[in-house]
Image (cartoon, rainbow, N blue to C red; front, side):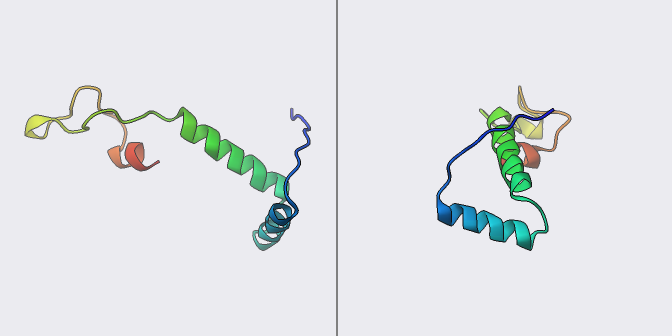
Length: 75
């Protein structure tokens, strides 16, 4: 199910979206929904609040044990 909504965007932004959509052989709708999903995923991601590796090279308390630390830091 989807919801239709209307937004006002500047003409130059619309032109840039139209060009990007044509270059990527996709729709403006697809570009916008992908951008919104990406933004929402970043906001819901966990924040790193301490070191991932503790003393003596052992995982620090609260560090992810089943995730790649690189993905946690740079996702």
